[in-house]
Image 1 (cartoon, helix red, strand yellow):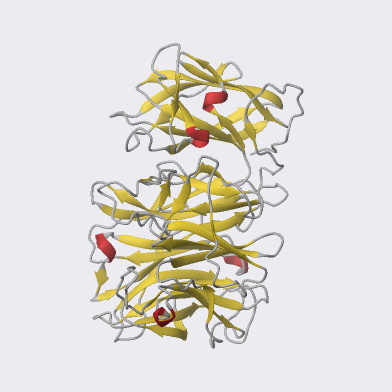
Image 2 (cartoon, helix red, strand yellow):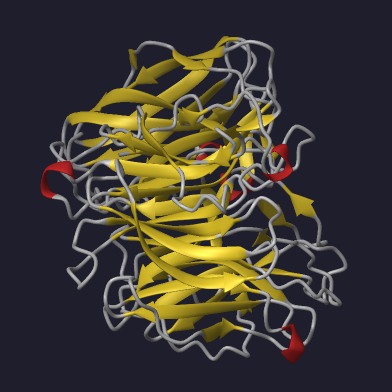
Length: 538
């Protein structure tokens, strides 16, 4: 891809959203979105969590291992026993997520703990006494067969996930019983996450149900290690509200460019909500250690009153703006009624987490509320690539044939030009409202020989090849095609594979040649039916 730069124009009547920053063809990488992302794992049987097939997918990009830098390592809860034990499959990709190979099935080395859940991956960022820069840590919860206790353990690999050794046992909780009711007496610990805090030490954050005698239904807690994860300091609270109702859990965290930290988490049992929607909250800390624990945090909202819900994942990306951009992905959305709805978008904020949030499309989509979805998108993971050029997403997606969850991976550029279809020149089509469409609208009824969408203001700073990503839906029974004309020249047709239904969005990518200055891109009806939401150019 060639450099994209802003073309200075006096035509203020153009209505489009632009995110343009220089980047070179040598460093450019293709997006992984066609076919709704690449498939890492597609289960055929399940004995695990809610018969989901797979949950809790996590991914890291290797950045401290010289020759292996850029490789992706992934794992997840596999809901199927192998030799009477649950495993965490470790997968690796050397082509930015397009293809994946399983390295090993990880099982812990305690015969008394055949069950394990909630894996989390972390690459060590600096040398310490017991872990070295480039080591990979794997945290999770171990359980006996009768689930009578929950044990937080951390394992270490010094060979990119091929072999593992126990680094430490961090903590131990009670039986793995899930009961979020205010009169619950359960005492487990859940869902660890590893991050470097502001002092440069490793901290582990997790959910803790052992403080109910203090009227804390569940707390988010942390411990810190100064030796790389071998020994751990005292337990401290991150979010712990003594009202017997609010149940914060499933924390993820990211560092912001002002060196502060922001955490996202769900709050189950919020008394102000008549339904248990697990609304997403955020909280900031100057150092990732001190959090004003009795403060529940702040719920986030978009301008139309929508908010994310359940098992969020947060990351910060460098999109070239002053403060960069915070992204949050979640399992579902909550509308202003409030009511549950699917959520095919990130919630985004360019003001270090303050104020109103916006929404923009995810790489990989899912329908977490469909009948065939058994905890689809539960505890997905999003991270920024090491070179700041892509956002990576790993998520479980419902498979309507197996009725289990496939593990999918996708990526989108962090810097791009976005053009809304409804703001283009339109002929014999219809603008359609849809809550999950970018900016809330898409273009439909592209059904006739004279139906077309013409983007007349595609501005680039030099001649070259670019990637065009088209966000579309196609609920028709067969694939659809549009004619593609660029600067008056007919190109190969764009093919839109069938999507699950109308309103279920996916991406298709097309390589195109653009010339320095202003370009026109036209999509018009060719065969069958597809609707267009927006395009990205990068």
